[in-house]
Image (cartoon, rainbow, N blue to C red):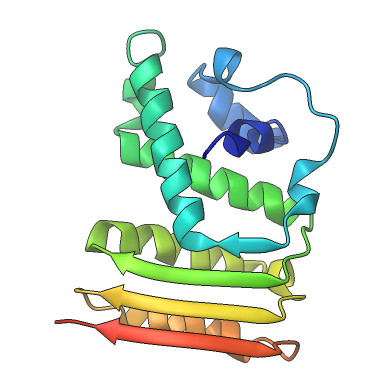
Length: 174
């Protein structure tokens, strides 16, 4: 279910809102009322589900908006998805959500590895975002070289003294 994405995007502000408004897509696709600061309730973040929920949501938005809005300026559906991914992550960072468990599940092809790398780099640039993580779950199954992502994950692990549990499964098939 990707219905949460529109609710979270209501928290867009400043530069992110300008980018989003540039493509005139928020008129009918985002709810207009929220009662709470929904991002503040996030305690568990699974990166695989995060990326794929956004991909499904952005494909749906792209399909519905194709002839209504100037989405061709985005270049492609995947660029639009990446804009949403980074926008949501920035919202989470700005709202200082208090994640207890971060699950990084990588089981994919090389194109999505770039999504993971971008997200993990953004997290590393804002290390306070994950300062309260107690549980880090890593699961990497890939047919591609993950050297860069593995390096980023090691940086996340090394930056934490609060980790209580690290669960790791790494399978790389070359």
